[in-house]
Image 1 (cartoon, rainbow, N blue to C red):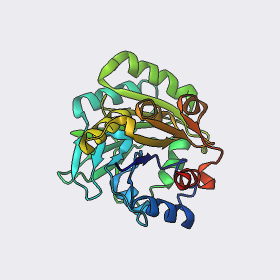
Image 2: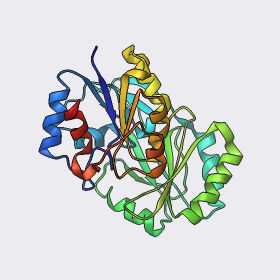
Image 3: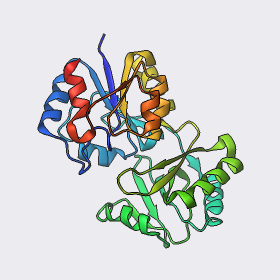
Amino acid sequence: MQPIYITDLDHTFLRSDLSISPYTIDIWNAKAKHALMGVATARSFTKSQELLEQLHINAPMILLDGSVILTPKREIIDLKTLDKTLGDAIVEVGLQYDIDPFIIGVKDKEINEAFLYPRRLNDYQRDVLKGYKDDPRMQFNPDNHTMKANLKIVYFGYEAQLRPLYEAICSTFGKAVEAKLSPEKYGGGWFLTLLHPEGDKAHALKKVMEYLGRDTEDVTVFGDSVNDIGMFKLAGTSVAVSNALKEVKAVADIVLPHSNEEDAVARYLEAQ
């Protein structure tokens, strides 16, 4: 039976400059000849394809924190969205804390996305936006209106501002929303991600394994951040890179001695 490996991308598999070393490419593609190889990322299908164009992906792709699951050929396996009524209600709570969100939603039946950005931007949001300068998904959203189908709503800022908002959203919406608050280790800020309650990586991993006809005990997962924890608790083997958050290392079966900058995932795969 083929082994299954699913990895997070940013700060786990990718280097901080978003590159992939020739060594990692060779190890991954060699492993893909005998194993199912997939990803679980906060990134979109289009951006993931761009970053991973030299890799052979032969397992379903968990995208946008788990709200979208697609085959490598972009066939839909599952899609979890927040509707406009709930999305707009979330934004109204955010306005009470003087912060506007980024909103990623589905704009057509082909699952093409729109990335809506607000009029008001804090310093951290401006830095984040620089990385999307030429992204065709970007749309100005001065009124903070959400879409009919929202994949995720994201607040970027600082802990002192986002933690009270996180607590207010949890109190207001309860189990209707999956809320994840986490530091962004390299930029110094924090981010609050709001998803459908079954739009996280843990639920997505279950769906992927059902699709493959396999048990979650059969999969090895790699990660570094808060949104990987649910996935770690389900997988047969969970592997944290050395630069992972302490909360992630605490639930990992294995903590690697190498970081994402040191080809940690590939080193592990080569040893298997």
